[in-house]
Image 1 (cartoon, one colour):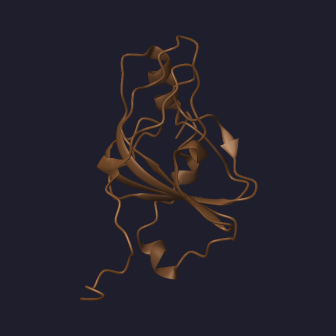
Image 2: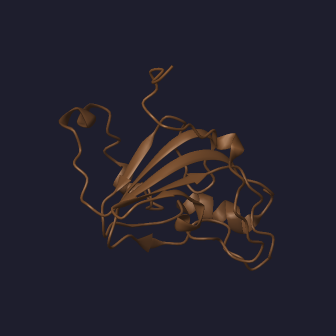
Length: 152
């Protein structure tokens, strides 16, 4: 019958993605890649067991993506690496912007207690600089850059 109105040649439900896990090390985001091209990478983060090794870092490590602009869309759940993030939010970390776990999330991970993540998020790492639409300013969280500070 031909084209039925969908814009994609395939659909992937996040529930069909098996999480990649390590009990000793927090894996880098690129380990969760679902699509890879020469100019961008798409990673899908799905619920998974948290690292069980007592000395393991259980949240993303601090880093700066020197070669990529990073966009993260928070779809659902409780985002274990950030405080104040809700489903439907989107973050942009331009190339070279240092970021990592929120101080409260880092403290919570060191205290233990959680055995699994409960989040679904999609990240795009783009080699080419991304442009932000002017209309995005109307919904921007202007203090986001300050959210890593222990003192607001």
